Image 1 (spheres, rainbow, N blue to C red):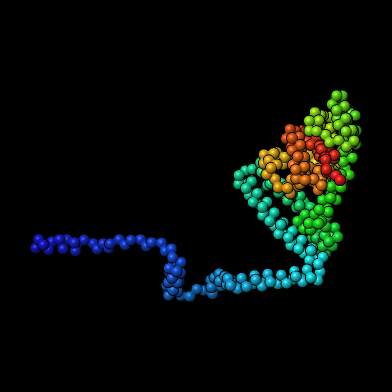
Image 2: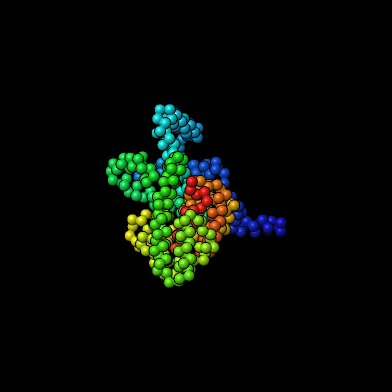
Length: 373
């Protein structure tokens, strides 16, 4: 009887089922798919088929080409493009040259756009300003912005119906004015650089004449005499030294020669040196000139931090060309020596002495040895 008591006591207790372990999450894709099918079948048996409206709202399956089919399409398109280009090269060589330049230019433009986007994202993520970037990123942003500003008027002309044919004709007959640098052939790039520098060099005489006129109204007699002698020596063909320019730097932050008080003719001549249009109102021309000079000053600071030894020959020539010197007849060593002189002056100047930086683009490049044949 004592032996049967535990069994009776346990039978009197309520029935308690043993706790089952929680199911583990299913990570296998095949197992997930099987569970989804089982759930759909159970819901179909329990609730019946879905109403027509809900069945119509069911997302359609995504159709995708097989990998082999897409690769065949890509190979076929590449083969057709190759045949088309060979046909153009054989039958229409001039048209083929334009087609090749346009294709390469479009790829270069898209690559620049991707790089600029990455630079902008880095600036936003790290809270950087344009003046805090390294030299190459700063130069890439500057050049891309100029390209976009040049392309905007062409895009506006092409907005009306059938105006795109007019734009194509303008691009074909006036590529220097209506095409950006990405779509120029190498021969056109060299030709247009020479033409632009010739137009810029035509403004050098006007800058010197405006300096001579401004010298007469300077209050400081000693510095006035130094600047007059400096302009006279430049007219006679002598290349000035950086120390001579630094000796008269105080004049370019005072009355008559600081940027805010330059005569309108002087400002327009300096704008032509920097490839800025002088046809705008005087206030806008002066503002644009100041903005470009400060941008060059930031570039000079970044270039000084990087070091001229880190630049390639192409980058050296582009840096000289931007600052007023024609590098087509110069060696890489001559370009580097001139840039050392330029940085020696630019890094000493303050933002209030931007007028001296603009006039030095003429004074330092006009008679540099080997710059002109």
